[in-house]
Image (cartoon, rainbow, N blue to C red; front, side, top):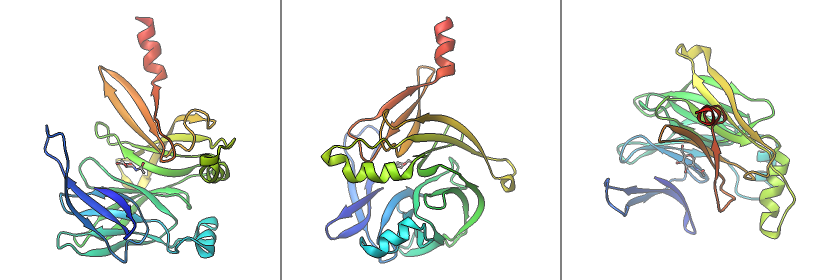
Length: 251
Ligand SMILES: *[C@@H]1O[C@H](CO)[C@@H](O)[C@H](O)[C@H]1NC(C)=O
């Protein structure tokens, strides 16, 4: 499932893929007045999903106010088995990346303007109940990926938001903006009420991959790496695990 910003309005496009096939097949593109500003989507089955709707206002003065002051006017929508949209959780400040735990029991949402990462449990009707929250200082989370081997979250985000805005505004004309980025690893405590445990995975000054918006773990031949991506870049950054590399260096 992909967020699809079409000229006729934004929506979520659903595709299917069979293992081994070299193609994906379009199944449907679904839209709703509840999902007027889709940011990210997580599939919960072949035909159901949660998606973040980041802002209330169309581009213009009110959008600027909303984003600048971090107004809690975004929400998460649920697209249920009957093909019906509903508001699953309202009152969020710029809900951005969305992901789920490997067993599907938790839905994770980054609220960039709070700035926080939130864990929800889903009710039968799709409504999301908040069960844990990690609020950051000096870190604005963007996208979330879940390491299915460990269940831990990798959250990519910004350390200097104004440089990020300047970079995104100027990048096509050439810019000297250096939006510094960081990746945090979060694990939900066994006792969910204790919340998240946070680790710092990496930080960079903005030269490595400007405007880093996502991080994922790659494990191959016993080597663990972190791959960084950005919606604003035409390349990715590959980071070796320092501890592991020194281990191999010693061999
Ligand atoms: C956000 O992360 C998810 C993985 O959790 C990925 O599928 C999606 O493409 C990412 N979106 C962007 C805009 O980076």
